[in-house]
Length: 123
Image 1: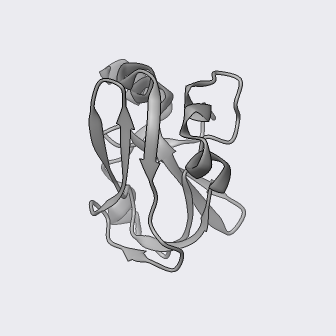
Image 2: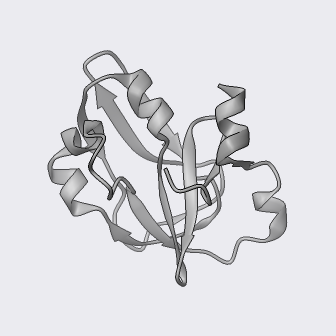
């Protein structure tokens, strides 16, 4: 994963890219879930607050809700992953983000997010 990602304790990440943010699930959690077989992403232009459920992901072993690491409005969906969620299992697949958001989140929303290296130390 990109070393500039910020992670939640519930295994979501956020990464600033140009004027938007990419949001996804950490590679650590992907490996824990096992083979991912289904993902439900939100609609474009949906507004979420930090901590709200924005997606559901299912593997052969379990289902998991994903929570917004920061507030924002969905401006893009990773259609490739939506159509073929098994791509998330491929270590060489680089576009593992799930949604892109526009956000004007303040520093308070970022305060509890972990740098990737700190996140890995936690788990």
